[in-house]
Image (cartoon, rainbow, N blue to C red; front, top):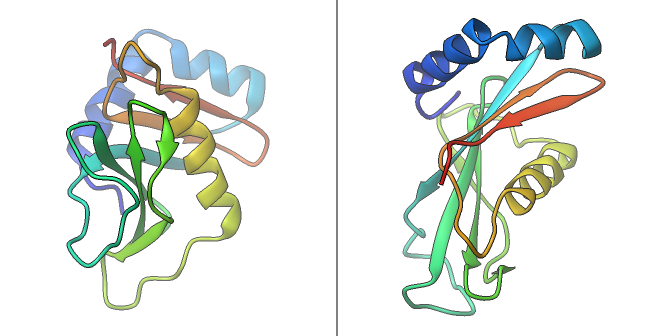
Length: 137
């Protein structure tokens, strides 16, 4: 489940009003899934390679999985300082397919920069394509 469904719905509505998502769907087909990237605390049991003010933890939540994927990144080097971890949102949560772990990593790293990053990131996907909206930094 998306970590903040109301916030995602508000962003989706704004993008629909601007015609952005209609153009995406006209070119790529109907949106069938959503991913939201937010920040989170590093789980205390997680061993990370670096600590400090530049380490941030990011997580992806989906509307088609009840499991979040997380990773810690040192923003000064733009490199991961942890392995991926999974956080179940329900008791019967299913582990995300590896393609979705890769999609999370690709989306996150494409939208991080030395100048900063916008959070949350909103991804709209279908079987053929994806579109990610990131707030201005």
